[in-house]
Structures are given as C-alpha cells and as structure tokens.
Image 1 (cartoon, rainbow, N blue to C red):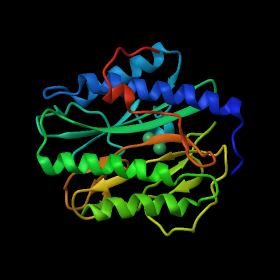
Image 2 (image 1 turned 135 degrees about the horizontal axis):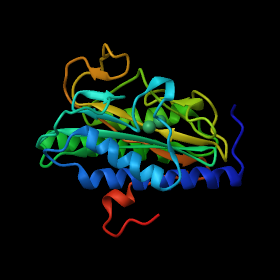
Image 3 (image 1 turned 30 degrees about the vertical axis):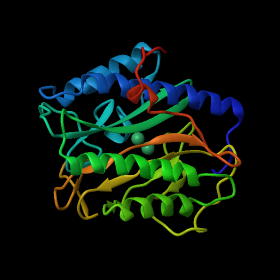
Length: 259
Ligand code: MG
Ligand code: MG
C-alpha cells in the first residue's frame, strides 16, 4: 500500500506524466470561444491513442470519456458535452493515461479567451497553491503538511478549499494510498517516504467551499455556483525536494510539442 516505487516504476510513471502533460497542451491549443467540450475530449483521446496509450478515465467506474471537462461552477468530473465554450468561461481539463501498466494523471484550468481579473486571480492562486503543496511534499513530512500548505495559501488569498475530494497515490492503480488532502494540520497524516508517488490536486473556489453532486452522479458543482479551479501534478517524494513527473511547461512555454 504505502510501498515506495522502484526507480523502474518511477520511470514508467514519468513516461505517463509526460504524455498527460503533452495531452493537456494539445487540448489547450484548441480551447477557444466557439469550441464544444466534446471537441476537447476528441483531441485528447486521439492524441493519447496515437501514442500507444489508453485514456484511463474512459470506463473507470463507468465514466464515459477520456477527459473530465468541468466548466465554471463545475469543480471536477464534468462530462464532455455539446456545450459551446464562450469568452470569459474557465474549463478544467483533467486527463489520465495508462501506458505499460502504469498511470498518468494531471489537470489544468484554462481560461477561454479573456477572463475577468478575479477569475484570473482564482486560476493563479489555485496553481500557486499546488506548487506550495509540492514544496511541502518532502521525505519525512506528512500528508497534513501538504494539505496545510495548500489551504493556508488559498485561504490567505481569500478563496476556499473543497474538502470532499483529495489527491492520491498513483502507480499501477490510478488511485492508491495515501489520500492527499488539500487542507489539514502540520505534522498529521501519513508519513511521506522517498519513492512515494503522489498526485496533488487542489480544488479552489471563488466563493464558499460547499459543493453538491449533480444528478448524473459525477459532476461536482459549487453550491453557490461561483467558479472553481483545479490543477494537478504527479510528483515523486524525494529527500529535500519532490521531483515532478508531470509538468505544465508544454502548456506555458513556447516550443514545438514532441513526444
Ligand atoms: Mg486527475
Ligand atoms: Mg488525480
């Protein structure tokens, strides 16, 4: 359960991390006003399968698609649909891959065209809270240290933290122990050991932290219907500093995308 991964396993997780990172960048290229979320899912599934991998979300506990596509007040687990993205929306794209028996899992919230300044700040703070969590994910620390780092940063910026969902270990299974909460107390929770591979994924709300489950049993909405953002990266715990196995560099830095 809490067995650290071997370096061979970490290498396979890194290959998956690279593929999800590049898939998110491919999706990001087509996010624009006028595009449906079905189209984003098609781009991702094609890219993943073209690289010999499988979109791990599709069929997972009955989930219908390659991506979770969560627009505006949808926190996570939205289905793709014929909804047409419009200027000022935000769309959270969560992507999973399965390749050579190991998993990749990362998420990024994209602005659609120009968003208002408060929404831009929600995106920036949510992503920064993820990096605060990664900074805390060092050998010898505990999962509560990660949660505390995310929570104190996000709440310090005036936003709220969803508590019903959390990050997780990753390996042969997409979701392994330990759970990685986005709130918590320093010095509490499972001990982090070198070679442990985890996904940290803050879900941060512009308004209150209350959420509800849609009637389809999947989409999680904010109770006040204000926006929510979600960023996720996979890291391996090391002594002193975690090593990222996935990255937003392909989205945020110019250059040709190769795999
Ligand atoms: Mg994910
Ligand atoms: Mg995840």
